[in-house]
Length: 81
Image (cartoon, rainbow, N blue to C red):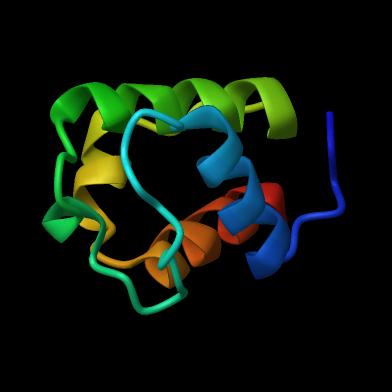
């Protein structure tokens, strides 16, 4: 379990895990579901990433409630606290 979560490290992990679409412009204010090529499968990949890297699960509703990368980061940080 990786407890050293920063916004930059989360962005790097997302880019690493989702390599079939262009995430070079991924930033804290990027609206996740507006990324060209983004599908619900990518949401599942994010859920698996959080489980593997941070040792807990995010629900589909928690993922659905996040709009930006920073929202996702805050949700993860809250669950880590």
